[in-house]
Amino acid sequence: MKFYIIHEGFYEGVQARIDLLKSACVKMGLKVFCVDSLDFDYSKLPKLSKQDLLYNISSGSQTLVSLLLNDEVTTFYKKNPNLNLITSTTEWTIIHTKAKLPQPKTIFHLTKNRVILKAYIDFLGGFPLIIKSPGGSRGIGTIKIETWQNLISTVDYLVTTPDSFIMREFIHADYGARVIVLGNEVILSKKFYFQENDFRNAPILSATHYEPMEIDEPTKQLCIKAVHLANLEMAGVDLLFERETGKPYLLEINFPTGFQSFMDDPQPVLTKMIQHLINKANRYE
Ligand SMILES: Nc1ncnc2c1ncn2[C@@H]1O[C@H](COP(=O)(O)OP(=O)(O)O)[C@@H](O)[C@H]1O
Ligand SMILES: [Mg+2]
Image (cartoon, rainbow, N blue to C red; front, side, top):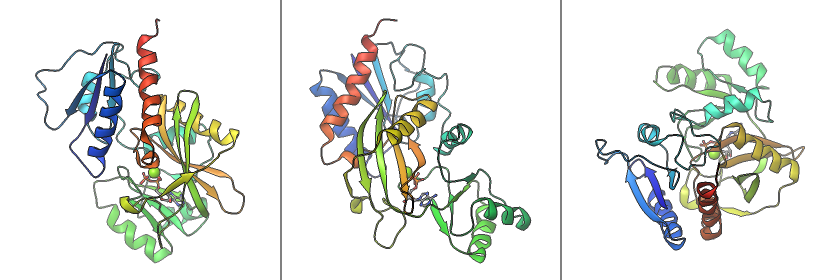
């Protein structure tokens, strides 16, 4: 059995992810092919079979992954799509909104129209509110807006950029959680606090801190549902727990997902993920 790790270049943390996954695969007797989609000969595309395990370990590589996907290859998708068109976790947020999962209220479009903006502020419950860019991670691109002038001066600029943004209700919380879903289970739940003088938990990678956390069954089911609705069997789920009520809010699901929340003990999590794919590849249909 072969494990194809796909990545697009190297942003911070990607090399460490590759090294960890590679060594876990080798320990489990798998042959590993690590493919950088920026530095790959597209005239020599392999045809992947059920015995090939495919995981795109970092953001990007949409085209290569689309080219490699077929009905056979073993992946973390429930059903392999023909194309991997997802470029931002916001697209899954649309699915979660339609399924009415508990999330911050969201407006999926940004405008500088003052009248419409006022209606959006009402819809989102007033200030503060969040503006979020599509492709960011670790909270970089997640912007907190506190006042009307802060909003209009930011929006007037953002609408001139090629990105599209969403606006979200601000959830007042003291902590959140990163949850890893695999199949029908939660295999990891870790609590995170916000970085010093920040409302975000991870903008400075080296200052990111997670601690073990028990989550209750309904919260687990929320995470599992959020992942399955996205046609996935594995993803990292971000939650915030509202300060007043303790109610969990789904922020987003991440696929691929970072390893930061289990860096203290990566082997058990990675072994479960790899074993899941091996079992799937060995299943007769
Ligand atoms: N609606 C919100 N209300 C309050 N804080 C938020 C909200 N959305 C995001 N955050 C903060 O920003 C962090 C990053 O947000 P997230 O949606 O997970 O974006 P990213 O894609 O960058 O990981 C969260 O961990 C949380 O601390
Ligand atoms: Mg996140």
